[in-house]
Image (tube, rainbow, N blue to C red):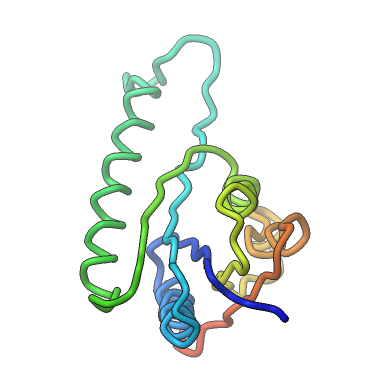
Amino acid sequence: MFTIRKIICPTDFSEAALEGIEAAIAMAEKWEAELVLTYVVSPLPIMTGSSSLAGYHLPAMVDEMEQDASAAIANLAADKIPSGLCCQTRILRGKPAEEISQLAATEKADLIVIATHGESGLQRFLFGSVTERVVKIAHCPVLTIRPQRSPSR
């Protein structure tokens, strides 16, 4: 029998991702599963030298992005996760789809719940789809949540 004991739910802090989190919370409550909220800090393109033309120290910038994400995911968990639900948070660094899939494998997750952004055309061509890539490479089932709300742009 297929049992759900651990759910990975990635976020990028968008409105669409919030709908994915709401769905993951409902499933975690129904199956009394553990929820793991995660955010992946994408690598910045770093060329020769560690400073950009604008004078930013790029490794320090990535560290700051990680600290900001840690605070944001902690606030998100505090605001959205019901008190009786077992929830962990993770901040990862790397390519989002690969890191999400690796986390699911490492955590022995039974399910990944991830929102789509509904991008198409040039936007999707330029940026790709993290959700689509997760579906292709994950070693566990992936439930995609298409947002019902209109995306704010």
